Length: 259
Image 1: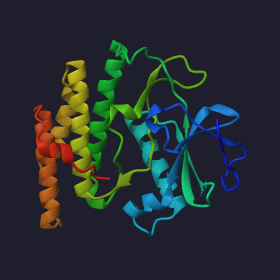
Image 2: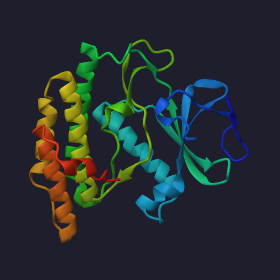
Image 3: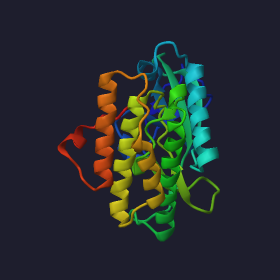
Image 4: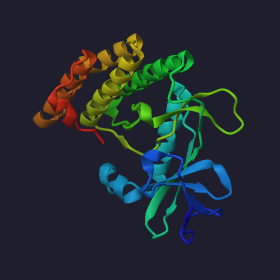
């Protein structure tokens, strides 16, 4: 494996490019410590994140906010997120945030969904829907929420080093977060789309999660928004309702990510 230059990074151990994830092959994004194979390092561009969050945010604040949100997801909603963040520079001297995640060893053969895993998946979407339902009540306070945590491909079912019992871990831990109402409803629409895809695969409706998301989209808080923002939110809610009914319009293929 090719070594990653270390003249700028804040680690004593050197990096090697990770081949752990086929999804990120060739993207120069995932690495491993040369002397610790149980960790995955994600290199996150600070400049790219600042474009979304505003130029007044600094690296320390950004990393702290990200860790706070993921801690909340784990401690309050029971979704394991084995990640830490370190600020620094990359090999070219650019400001980055390093996300250091425990490597999760997949315990499934051929992506088989066991009854135990199916139960954990349903609990996951109950937790995610409750997370956004709770965030709905604090949108007027400009509270930040994570925006990219609802796709099943972002989770791994398995064990960390020296563990025996497999569980679902959130391992795709980019620092995507927002605090505006329009993004919130696009994110909820994507949550429902991803959830209904998995429901179809499992041939089961996640009734508690569906009740939560129905409450979220029932009466959006539109105070203080301009007409374009209101229109975007109504469009997102319409798509969300379509997903709940098992309908996918041509427009749904162009649904904004909200991030």
